[in-house]
Image (cartoon, rainbow, N blue to C red; front, side):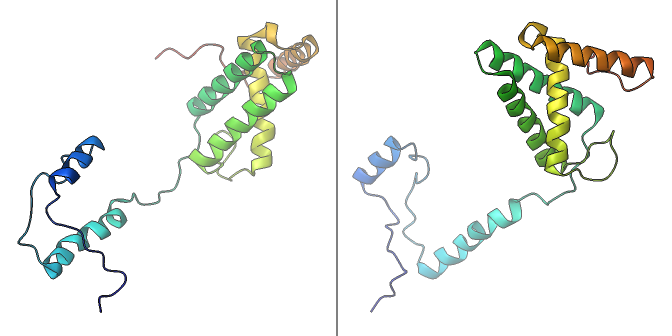
Length: 179
């Protein structure tokens, strides 16, 4: 009795099978017949193919912290998302929440929640969300002020003036920095 897990696959596809393989885009996969390979030799040749995905996988590396340039890019992307959503008629709060969540998830996924300007400690997803929402609002005020409610624009401008007078952090650039 043959074991249940062993399936017989013909080494030489029939002309009908070759036509089906070509139609499926796999015509080059079996361009020739290999009738001389017996079961054990096929298994020996197939073993490296089974192990190949394990060897090809990249090593897990420590994610680099998000640089100032990365954060500028993420802020700009979030702000553009807010502008697009607002022009499509989506409420400001929803647009900002979605843009902020997008930025937070990118920072979490790409940089492990670490932002170079903040320090070496990874931020929690909640901390990332709060900061990302603020970044998206700041960027939206600069990129598409007509899409931002007047009271929010006033608060942001007042905050930026207060930070500027106190020598605080600069606002995100409205345009990409020239190299």
